[in-house]
Image (cartoon, rainbow, N blue to C red; front, side, top):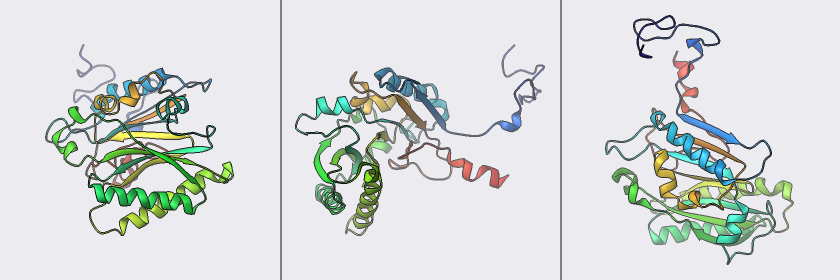
Length: 270
């Protein structure tokens, strides 16, 4: 019997009836969200791979645009792969893990605006007593992107920041202040700076995301397929945009979490 045909637990319209531990009242509309972790907290590349596999398995929970290729957004949040950055960023002398932060930044494609955004962010890092170590242009491959996604694609950079003399327990609070002050100043610049977005800025996690579907994520960011790119956990999200248009910044996960936006509206509407 097909799973869509009537049966002891399904009526003729295809709606499931309560049985066992299942109750249709507990069903919720949601995007594709997943989390995987090692209980021993040891970072491994297979956790990143499993996170991406979750996205691929949940691709039906996301959506695509009119070009049939541009996704509503997908991404992965992981622990900072300390060893990977130490090996790939030879020119940067990184302090001990958690004594530095990694910022994943979307920047404008316009070269002058991009430079202004970078200068502003660096200025606020220094004002808060931290130290800019260097920037890294994140390798990307947009060959698989849809036209809609590619038309508004920002540049992806990572900034490395040392806590300097800031107490470790205050470091992430300082990073929050740096981000907010930089965002406010960038918004006052002349010109279209809408591509500027701080995807993540943390001493413990980093976020890779974009206007993508799950299968495009590892193709767009080659970092994710490197064996040295390891994490003890992976939080993933594939977006189905219902009440806001999809953009690069609105892809999830966000800086600390992934959530289904309809939790804000569905119950209230009912």
